[in-house]
Length: 119
Image (cartoon, rainbow, N blue to C red; front, side):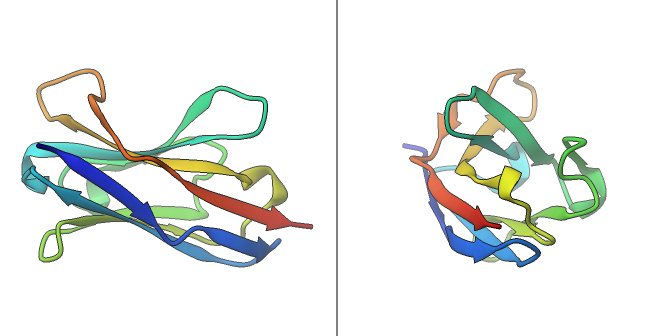
């Protein structure tokens, strides 16, 4: 059974940094595309970043490109999201998601972790 659990959320001032982690169980990371999504208050869930094999194979939404970095830690079976230069607009619940490399939709989701950026 696949299980994803996020951690690392919290309250940070604008310009600060946070590192989110997603602990994955029941799957082998190298066989899955791992991603982060977020849902801001009153808005729909949006794509943030995804990684297939390694940092070089990642892609990002325009709103976080250059500030966020997604990576896989194969030794720990986790996926990390390093978030720098945070802005109040980054305030949201952040969700970890997984899909098999051959699939087109994300079938597995974590419960989410809250990130709040104060101005």
